[in-house]
Image 1: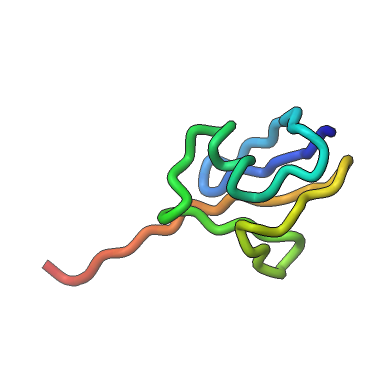
Image 2: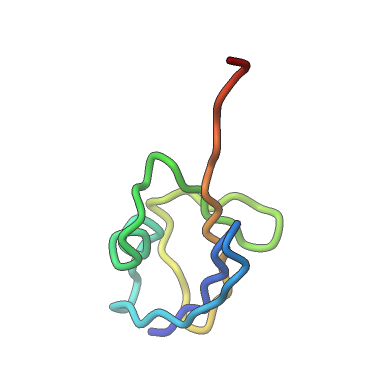
Length: 70
């Protein structure tokens, strides 16, 4: 299956080929992204990493940035 992925904050898009019923976690592995610092969304809705993705779907992979005052 093919999934269109928007990468944030890079503001780039790419198509990723995955096995049928691949999950968000599998998508992050293919992209080489750590699951503990990325969030997947469909539109404005967060997607749990164990949720199967669908062929032709569009998802965003958002890098989480944290920090505080120095």
